[in-house]
Picture 1 (tube, helix red, strand yellow):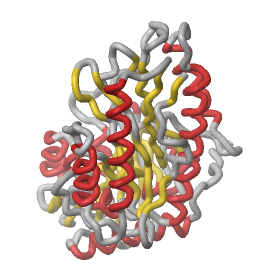
Picture 2 (cartoon, one colour):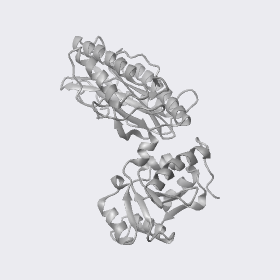
Picture 3 (tube, rainbow, N blue to C red):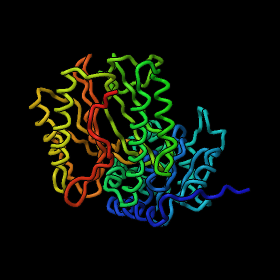
Picture 4 (tube, rainbow, N blue to C red):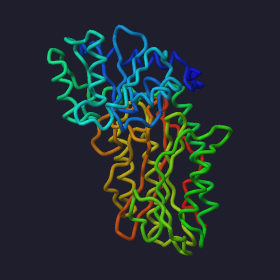
Length: 389
């Protein structure tokens, strides 16, 4: 039986809109065909979220064709047929003989497909940052008369301004994140294992909320005393102790779209130093959100936060956040002092105010937000408190 199409979260018109924006940039750069290899950009242009990017694969966007073409490992092609909006005739699977082959691999199959399409002398756009240098060399050797143009993060920047449909997906993801954080309040208790709490939180991220299931799992960082100065380690086998602090970072996911959330938990009364840091962070967060409006810059938002936090006697060394959408962070704009990126309506960011100051002092607070026509919309509805257990 043929693989059926899965239900499509976004309509066909949404993908054609995105492709049209990419094709405008291709025409500006006089690119005939674009090979998209960054997994998030493949998701953006096709709906594909299967985890197959550990092997060569590529989405081919041509100015001549309405729909893109996708080539991947043969065993992953059915997932592409199921998830992508494109016609199944435009999905190709290369043979298993190219896997773990020291002489020929999947990139050879990608190049063969391009050459079979008559592109020996074409101007071919590539995303060099998502390719090994030897892969780019392979392309140049395989098609010596073609010109390969690195488009950098062009598609990621196009992704930066979301459609209303994308913002809806992120709101749904935020509801799931909120539900998981509330579940965390129930299971982060003295005597419970960190691993058991993480399992319950993860279950909520999958079950979802308001009838909307989580469609993937993003990173989950649960950093409990004495590891509260760490930021990117998972749970352990240890149990929560009375008097401990827990910094939690998680995210809900809907069809690739991610909304992140960070909060600090205290099993008992927090220390005066943590309480003072919390007050400064919340004041800084509110100042940062007040600075968000079309025409302001990412740097303006970061400056508003940092200026306020200093009044409480603290500094934050790391950036204040980043563009967010598909697969957590987008590799474009940063909420940091000096970033000149101009805010536009429907840009979305994770205002990430985790602050790791000393080896015995760390703290977590964040909001995912959307730039509106006149200001800001935060996706979470949870209070900006230290959650005392």
